[in-house]
Length: 206
Image 1 (cartoon, rainbow, N blue to C red):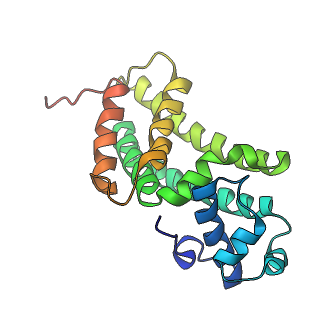
Image 2 (cartoon, rainbow, N blue to C red):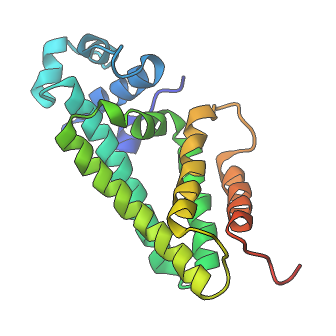
């Protein structure tokens, strides 16, 4: 499993030791699962003593929260940028899916932890992440609603459709590997085509 690069993933996290711990935790959580990973596993993988972890994080759950919150904040920011770029629901949905899927493929190790270890978060921290997820889903629902109103999309239920769109992208992290084909960018394009068809859009040039 390719270890995530802390400076690439969390450039704003300070100090550097905290970034190293987060990167080590991502690898350990992805390989063993959150509950089977110990603070010693994380610290050792980061080249530190177990006591050093508590200098930066009060508990193992705090490391998971930092990883999960960061990932969800990035997803929300990406969706917000895409939505603001173009008023056309079809163009917006295509770009959104392309980028969302490509990120989950390219960052599959991190995404696996961000998306699939939510149940391990303490209630208060879970609610913070859940709010980020709700906000992200609301943007997708708004795009679909706009497409329906313009007769570009045809779906029986907007909420279900939005969850299906996001779910397709999230699931990529579960099975994608560095040797998987196609590459993340091309996979994003293929998923975008599938999602537009799923939403009932038909290219008028066909």
